[in-house]
Length: 115
Image 1 (tube, rainbow, N blue to C red):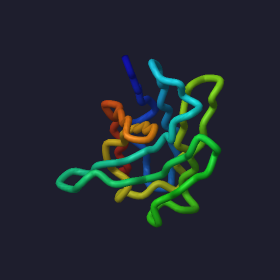
Image 2 (cartoon, rainbow, N blue to C red):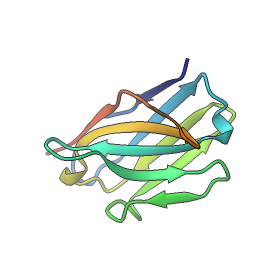
Image 3 (spheres, rainbow, N blue to C red):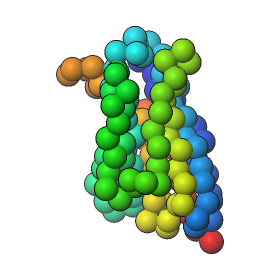
Image 4 (cartoon, helix red, strand yellow):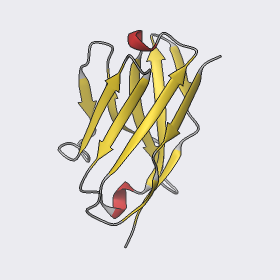
């Protein structure tokens, strides 16, 4: 059974930092593309960043230069380091994995950026 469990969300002031983690189980982690997506209230879910099995990274324009995605295949975990956070980054952040047409999602972790 595939499980993706996000952690690390919370309340942070504008300009602050958070690091999200997503621990995976039930999959061969290293062969999956891992990604972070987010959904703000009243908006559609959108791509934040992805990292392929070979380590190639892709970022949404809105987070480029502020967020960094990384993975540790020895820990079956993908991370999202978020710096210089803005109120517009407030959302539920979801972890996603895909291996060709096999896709799984985590349940999400809430990030609130507010003073």
